[in-house]
Length: 75
Image (tube, rainbow, N blue to C red; front, side, top):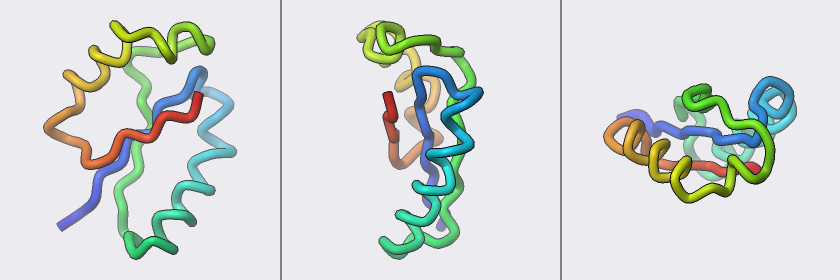
């Protein structure tokens, strides 16, 4: 069974290139070497205010709740 992780950034276009390898290594060290790590692109958040907005977070959780085991916020 795969382990699905959704990375949520304040601006994924730049942040994903730094954080995704770190999270991949972290999950490997925690015993999840084959974790499926995806970057949240919908909705496209821009800025810390959008990333921490409760309506945006609810929307993301509703969109991905049945597909994701771990929501990883890096804001």
